[in-house]
Image 1 (cartoon, rainbow, N blue to C red):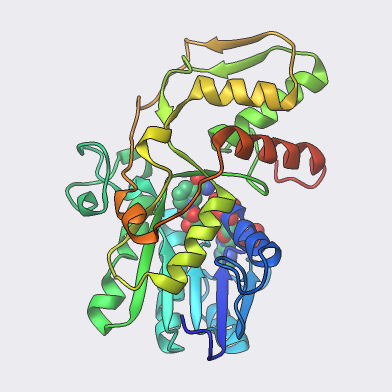
Image 2: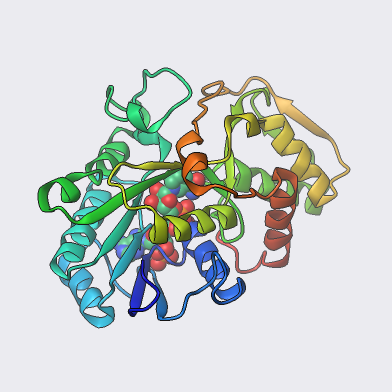
Length: 311
Ligand code: NDP
């Protein structure tokens, strides 16, 4: 992305976990710095209230209004049909409006169910995804390469591992593991009840702090021009157990009550590490926020914003 011409960056899913993190980085890093806003750049963050991306007319009206030169496409829903519609509309409209560069956001669920670990960018198409998110994964896979191959445009994709941070979804029915445990522990402290974590606590996961991920997206938009997807993650050596996550949450919340693991609950896959070697080779020096610090910041955000947090 050149800094001399005018660049308008449209971020879909701008009200979500990742979108809000990109907005925070753009607003708080100093102008002209590595991840800060550059001269001639305008950043536009949109959510479903501004345009329903399931609807082509609504999507086109959004692009007509902002005329973006660059798009970071984060908006997503859990259902295949909705996701297919959103992705088709955003890619098709980006092409129609001659967007210079687009980054689609995938996730590690696009990888085959039966695969050798660690995951890396070359293994996506080696087999079908896991049956539990077959539709979602296929919709995400569809975003890969098609436009670059069909039309030669600069459309690429990012594959983050598990994300957490401020503005996450803390709803106890459908939240991911970190926001769910933060909310549970918060309630246990408030109500003076035990904090019980489902499963043995032994499985390992790679988590990336949303504000670190935001910086990686900003870097990718400016400096990564390959069609091949890029895994955005901490290194494999940064895997943590669910017990380490729960311990850090207990500490950050200051919970002093009864705390245990319900080993009658299923654990899920033991580990599914992804390699960030390609990223590290390309980005050079990049410091990830230490896990405990990132978790503490996320907990502090939740406690401070309890009334308005998604839950
Ligand atoms: P969130 O669920 O936090 O936010 C989803 C965003 O999509 C919201 O801004 C929402 O707007 C918007 N959206 C949903 N439906 C529509 C629609 N019909 N029209 C327009 N906008 C819509 O998502 P995350 O920030 O967690 O995820 C961002 C991306 O990262 C997604 O593509 C996700 O698959 C991917 N990802 C996420 C991971 C994670 O751990 N969270 C891991 C790996 C990948 P509104 O607020 O108005 O509903």
